[in-house]
Image (cartoon, rainbow, N blue to C red; front, side, top):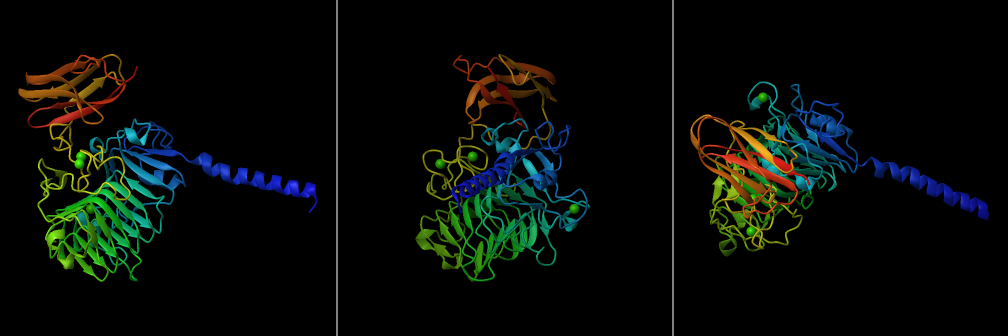
Length: 465
Ligand SMILES: [Ca+2]
Ligand SMILES: [Ca+2]
Ligand SMILES: [Ca+2]
């Protein structure tokens, strides 16, 4: 090859690299999904968001994120039980948004529940989606982050008998900040993992139901293929009517760190038929803890407990820790895959040491998602964004004691605006962006909470300067 031909060859290769590499880089995008959006329904912004999550997932390609605002999303508007939300390589499915944010770190999951619900067809579980979510041989670039998953019922013939909330087959997807509540299956009511190396971090499994593995089934056809990594996960109040109230493991080797297994109903919390579950820094009911480990639970790698973790309400699926919980500050800060926040969106490590479970304990006098809001009490916050003053309007049915408080995104109280008895009717209170000490606060996001003894409601406001 002469010099000119070689140069042409190089030039062609460079051109090819530009042509073939650039599109992949330039199409990486955020795709917006919002159940109540009323714009162009093309996913290009919150205003023009897709209203159906399936549309968002189907147009997403490698490098894309699908941001999903608070609301309820079903795998199908029809009655096909095999309809499921699929995980895809290179695509992050991210819930917990109010529908105004411009970055993932702005979202506060506990305020904006994004619910994936398998409740289709007639009311009741019998004809629901087999798997609300599914992942087939996807790698760690497939991410699931910030959803509530409920209503799945894997009551069919194989492969539709495992993983009512999520079924993972092969691969190693990343699952974090999730709450699997009230799903059902023959095996693995909340989730199933087959020959998988999935990582599961900051996840709650509550009130799921199965014959085997009320919360989770881990399964491997051949020994030593499956190796799930389960970190800071709370498994409580699940039921198995045959074996493994919490976890049923067949020939896989799950590693469980900083987690809680408590208050699940059935024969043994953890059952392995071949393989073994390894527990580190975890609170496992009936295990004896590392002091007195019962080998039937699997392998003790140290620092395990067997003590009531004082969960807020196992029957309500609320895995927040109560004051004085013995699992506070008992985890391992070096556990793999930890995000900066806990399942609520609060800082993951408080008091310098991580807690066991999905919730990092914060002072209960701070703001929290600990009671249901039966209906909206706040009528408006206006203007929003605001500067210098925002006015909040709210309704009272009865004469009651009301407290109106401003918090920052960390849940710290900024200003108590009102505390006292008010009459039924519409009330208005303004905030002048000044804190308790009389200082102007920084621009950014704040939460205004209105509460009585019986209810609470809140709105997010943004101060712009
Ligand atoms: Ca149904
Ligand atoms: Ca802590
Ligand atoms: Ca927390």
